[in-house]
Image (tube, rainbow, N blue to C red; front, top):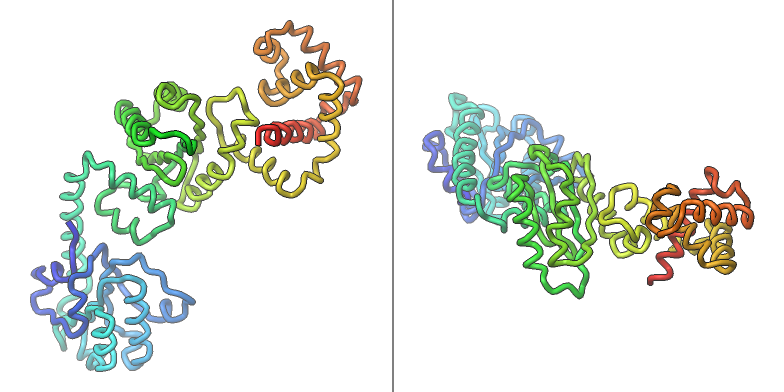
Length: 396
């Protein structure tokens, strides 16, 4: 369902146009159309990065007497993956298309199309309108074709995470969303030993389809990445329900969720944060089913401290080691209280199957041993990090 330069030449508005160079590139795909008003923007940039697949409309009015600038534009457009050049108003501003420009275009198989000479009767907008109408029509046909196509969704995910802007531009034929429309990411980590990736992927797709949530889902490296548009309505307890839905095929799945994404850069950063922390985060937060941004950032901080030699946290590591050596029960209570149950004595007692007075007694014993001020800000934060680091090290 691709549109080529040759397809555009069949449009009524192009009936009097002439291909003057680069005819070897008439099969190039056309994904859009843009206007070059001034060459200075292109020529003054260190490196031109177009979207790729665009027909560029120009009259070379800003450089009609500068062959070197025209040659540079053709070279940059061709290298940037654009489809061709449509030159207007030849004979009025630009007297002739220079032979050197045509020779370069032939060498690069970069089509140059000349609109009728010595007239300004056909403005840019007429050509832009008909080309965009053709693109829009093809997109409608493509959308009808892709209703049940998971491959396009998976390619969209991969193109975003690879930061492949040319592929994203091409996929805009088939997909109604742009990276800027993505607001939510769900990341399911896949252990290397897990052999049912395809079955898990199908089940996740079914979950979102059954709940009428438009999600782009694909396997990327050692994960299944789910991207959800701002146009979708989420269901309550979505992550809880997803966890339960796939738990029968993938016991204790490791899921993270990040919201409030606003750009391609946000998505990339979110993915990198998940990928960096997924192996260790389950060792820190042993009781949690899934993880949010704050827990991911905390884990990232702990991993980086380990990499840097832990010198910044050495004092607090010595304290928790002292508690552990003196009484294992005290240490288990301390780590559960600080990390697993968010300094909540009731939850700590319920989940450790202890009376709340026992938990309080143990915490008082710890305070006697290492000082009560250790449970006050900011020391309590450092103590929590030290315990988290111990959990990571003990499971590596």
